[in-house]
Length: 279
Image 1 (cartoon, helix red, strand yellow):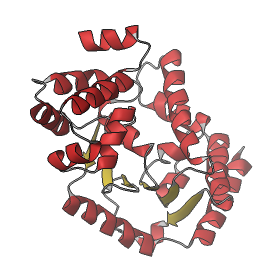
Image 2 (cartoon, rainbow, N blue to C red):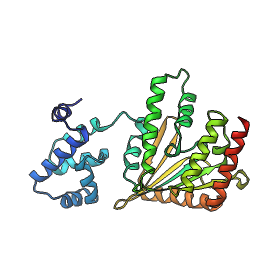
Image 3 (cartoon, rainbow, N blue to C red):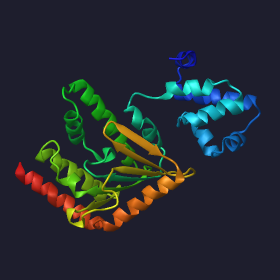
Image 4 (cartoon, rainbow, N blue to C red):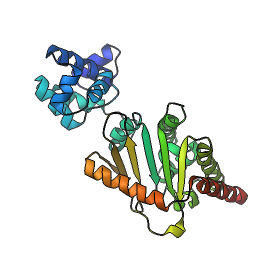
């Protein structure tokens, strides 16, 4: 840990809060407002406000620009490394930070129920399947973090959430029939309560625009949207406008092939009953 982060701990601040406070101090010493600094960095003033409040972590390129503009000799770039939290896999950290700020989240599950929609038992089965020698304590910690993330969509002030689920997602027996029945009822319940707009892509639609990958699209009130795609032990956050546009277009095409919201909820509930009957 850097000496700056040791100082943060001594002051009772989180690394993010210390980073933000130091940024505000250096900015003011240069006589810059948040708006002027944002103009020099070619970003929105809201993003600077997020950094200074400790809500968002600058990208590496933005941290380097901060050092150039503020004349801080690499300080903010070096400090940035200490802001990476160990709550999630390294490739997902940035996406998790953005997820908490999004106003609209569009999910796609090609083989698994997306993490934001998972129940504890379903998540536990997923994590255990991915380890040759599962450690119960580690598994429970991972499950706990995933369910904390899922709480994002439970509040009245949560983001608008859409979800497209391939039929493979709702047919694959993850954790057994009882676990699947509970999971599918959870998703349909979110749909019935208006928390998530759910659409199922049935097998008989054949190929569709999102067949090759899961994707998460996130929109923000004052910043450009991003896309996140993930594979085995890897993930990539896309913020280049043309690539985000392509992902959004693919999502729209797949949505056009999916069942209606009501048809999708009926299908989820019917398959849940089928899993229950197995028990």
